[in-house]
Image (cartoon, rainbow, N blue to C red):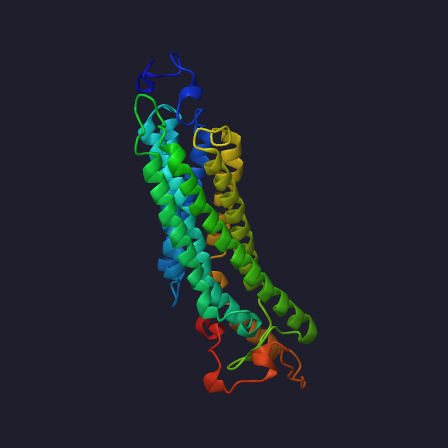
Amino acid sequence: MRSIASCNFDTCPVAASPYGYPPSSAAEAIFFVIHVVSLVACSLYSFYLADSKRWLEFSIPISVACLFESIGYGVRIGSSIDPWNVAFYATSTTFIIVAPTFISAAIYLTLPEAIKILGVEHSLINIAYYPFLIWIDVVGFVLQLTGIIISFSDLSVDTGIGPNAKIGSPIIATGTALQGVSLILFLVLFSIVLLRASVANRQFGYTTFHPVHGFVPIAHRFKFFVAMLLVSAMCLFARALYQTVIMVDGLDSWTAKNQALFAGLDSLLIAEAVVGLVIAHPVRFLRDGLKKRLASRNARPMIAEPRVVSQYYMGGHLTPPDSTPWSSTSNFV
């Protein structure tokens, strides 16, 4: 049997390569550029455009994800020339599998501040608990790495994927499925917050009463930020579902070796999630437009407005200012 290490497009069928296809150099270059540009933009937001709060808890995970994706697609560009190179295959597959973990971590770390603006009374759980969703992802990340190590432990330059891949793939699938579970929890909990805030806004014209600034309407920039959080989370969940199916079927399955599926259900979804979050970076979009909104309020005729508070606010009772959580809007002035 011919060693795939000596294969080229003239001597071996590309289906015999670990990928099962020659990665498209054009597609890989596009996604490589997207993630490199996103990495640079994220750094500019935190270290150049930020005036007070740099949001490193958001920028660092997103930057790591962009770096990992860039490495993965950079290696796939090399694989377009030599798809039989097992080292290239293992490297690109590893970085692309684990990178989205950091994107979801950035979302979870940002969520409490977004809920403070909408009103903490709309949340089913204490907002301090939302970052704990990261621990589900951490367990999933460890399982993914464990499965990858096992899957590629007997990778051969002569034969490609070894029998250990059948042992490691289900472990990777379990880790990816766990990350999907954390995304579902996020979507359900945050959707409830948005629903309750929407009801309050329709009923009273405001989502919450901020102890320092009173009733402050939600800025359009903040609505855009919330939309990007939801879209990115849904993209990550769809991608997690796709990767789970692949790993259940196996690395040598038809689904794993279908380039069109990979481009549409992994590359495109992750690129959309990253670009959306970078465009709506908290440095610009979680400042909440407080100054602009307060100026708009002051410009309106000074008429008495009934101060009605959402029925969800602290069980219907106002809490004294010293015990009410400080509104995050005060951080973005």
